[in-house]
Length: 208
Image (cartoon, rainbow, N blue to C red; front, side, top):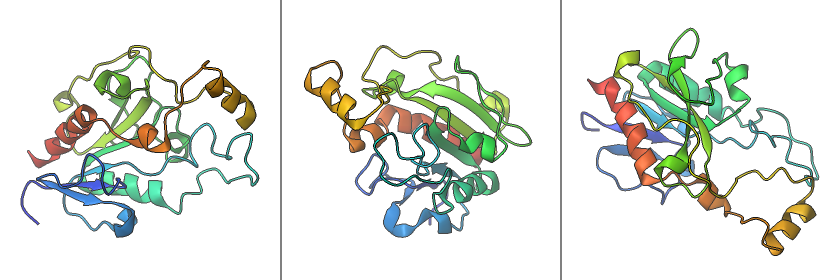
């Protein structure tokens, strides 16, 4: 592996990190929990069991267990702490509390994550996502004053990822009647190229 490489963990095999120079992409078939280093990382661990609907939502037939992600988040945060880089998860992720990371202010700006690292809240709608998609970042391995200023605060209005419906039928009715639009699972998960580039900028601070 060449000097200056960044490892992108838990990414789509055909997403924005695929076939990019200087990026060692780890899609599902490589099992990013086994990443051995030594390059700084950008980590996108699965969020389904950590978000607001970790239990599966109101229409779920089986109640899920909070944080039951087969160890993906734990492996991701350890990789960031060991090798440096940045981890991305949805705003209000329960993983922050579970792993003793301070919750950042919604208004933006980098703050201390706790014992190590830095954290912030930024909306991906500023970077091309069709939803506002408020996101928490956790970064390690660099000085606070080297972290880039991001576009803070609310993004322009966009499609909401979470409409707060009480049932699957209520959501379907809203979509059918035009009250709301709905993004596909891939559209929700996909990182816009400009936001990817911001994460790469952060991870590359660990190479200097």
